[in-house]
Amino acid sequence: MSFCPGPSGPPGCTSIQEQRDRWDRKRSRTARELVQTEQRYCQQLELVTTYFVEILKAKGTLKQDIRESIFSSIKAIHSMNQSLLVHLENGYFGRGFEQMCPQLHHYNSYVDNIYNARKVLGIQLKKNKAFRRFKKLQEARPEFNNQKLEDLLQLPVQRVDQYKHFLQDLAANTSPDNPEFQQLSRAVTVICEVSQRIQNNSRRHENHLQLCRVQKLLKGRKTKVLAAGRWYIREGWLKVVPTKGADAKPKMFFLFSDMLLQAKRCGPLEYTNRDKFAGQHAYPLQDCTVEKVFGHTRSQGGLLSLTFPKAKLLLMSCNQEDLNDWYQSLSSAIRKLQSKQTVIHQRDELCRRPLRSAADSHNMPSSSSSSSSSGNPSRKRNMVNAESSEHAQMPPVEWESSAPKRMKQTDAPEQSSAETSTSSCVIL
Image (cartoon, rainbow, N blue to C red):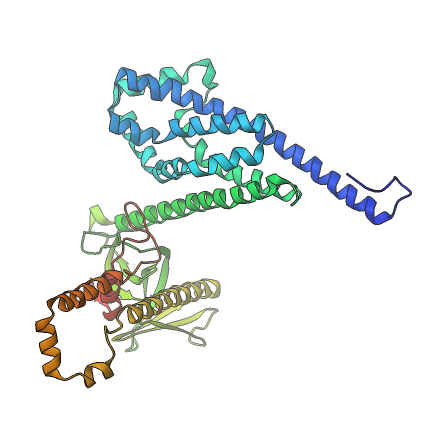
């Protein structure tokens, strides 16, 4: 509300009032769109819970564990969104999202299970004839309006991203003096965390698919690509320049977050493996250095020199852009891996502090030490407990990427990363 009497007032006051009016209009438009989309969203969730979850539970067409794998927490999500819709229709946006945020663990459970839900649903549609017929009949109802179950199950994941944009617009067009401003700001933070979780899950799933694809391209089972904490980066053909003046031979290279895999195409006589590759060498990137070498090719392009503790690799490409991409990818992967190991070693040093200083142990006679330890068993037990608790506090090494099955980033053990870093090259 303006304190200016009218057009005759100061121009600065008029501009402030115009800005507030624009905020009000934007907020009203965003609020109206949020309410309308929320009504539609709740209707779609009700289709799933009423015509699938409840009826399948009553009929017993699917076992309980399979039903929960497909629909996860969608029933709880429908219930909490119905409560949210009541607040939104009454204009209490801040209060509605503030009451919704503590229940967002239902969304977390749902988005973590979405890829598994797709997989289980596909298996049931392929093997379970009764469920396949039931799904077709339910989707033919006029209430579904030609919507498929697969699309409806994806809605909660998509809705989180919509909430993020709606809340950001509402908070940006709400005055800081408004009591709802703090509520909306807190809701933006919480919703953004769920949105980031969805993006991370998507990246882990895509990475898992890439690792599986590369594993299928390799002949046999000797070369293991699927490993905890490994990220796929890129692949392509490069020529390996030998050290003794022979002709450079093209090889296929697969770059991961922790190693560079060299492979060759299987021969034409191997009918079953004619489209596959045979792994030759696996070069760990932990102690690797990469440099550009120019002037060794007549056309555009150049050489990359990779130095390992006990091996050296000279790679050539006639495509300058492709060579630059390889150099950037290799440099980035090596830098990230080495910086991560530096952080881990610093943690280890902090966790491996002695129980007492060297000076104290020097000044204490051995006889008194032995007598005190033998005469005071409780102190000895305390020292043992302190050592065990110290080891328990040592954090495990976490690879930067995801695990192959669930694609969690915390599954890679410290020992495995240390072992791979010490080896120079594995001949496959």
